[in-house]
Length: 449
Image (cartoon, rainbow, N blue to C red):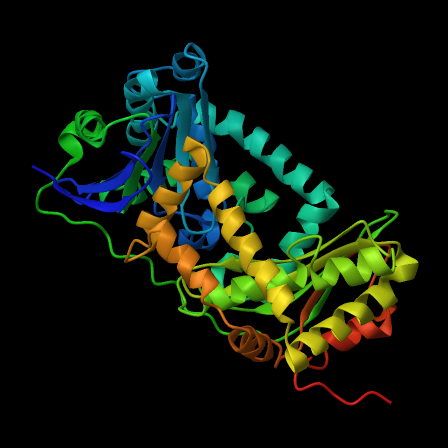
């Protein structure tokens, strides 16, 4: 019998349960008795950070290929089995994992588990399909490169995380994808898609024991009692490459700006202070950044701050899009607000707003089975300890103003990495206040003349 335990209890009879099957396969469910839907995800602990140079983009390539056919189903049959019940079938690839998922009515959950597990375990990876999807992926890369926001995000990550695999694009490059062979793709699939690195996450109107039974049937001869789950990913080790400026030349009407600094890894104990800092600074319409740049000065339609987090590193960044003539003053206002936060912190009202926004947004973001499945799969795959929702909300509420100020000072002691997309051909064409952000740290703040 699998080892099972309750991780969390929610309202009514809802509960989160985890079973570890022979061979290390983990099955986690959230039973939502009132839900008429169910979301099923097979999470594989494989992503773009696992790719050697010649394999760049292969994890994302597999995401496309696995839906093309298995030993038991053609690609049309795979799609039709979920379309026939009004469901959704899809996948996504990230730097550190890949997820294949379905969203269906609860009474069709057994079918969805069988289909998604079949896709992940028994893909044919036919040579003809490799060639067909190569063209699709190359078109996807071209679409990414054509989009100012997407290309800017890639350029920023490449500079901020230079030398670390999370700085490389998940989909690879046009050159790397064009060079991948069927043998390379198939070999990577056979080596990396191991049940020990997988988590099956299901949320909705289902019972845990039923899901475990369906998963055991789907994995059948793949469960080796001598094996256990793979350890949580530790990361490659991050070395700060130092600040720099990157210009993405675009013949467009706006200048798109991203600037930021390395921050905390995914499970750092101070991550809740960082979340409050980012939310108070640029997380909503009441934030410092939005109020100063848009509401008070009318310089931009879109501006915000955000964080990213991986096994061994992360980022805190700000984004704004404006007319090129306004880029200098926008950059100066961002710097002034960063200095003010590092020097004086936030008011009590600002902190209360940020904590409330984080707590409310977290809970409201978990109102459907798909979002709950995503939370379960990601948490169990990437964390050594499961954090219940109430504990997460309590941790946010406990963040103090002193902790937020200390976090701002800690992150702003190095100059920022800057990336700009717009009508510029080189860094020296950018306004002085923007280039200054990449030369001098915000903290300690310097006296202004």
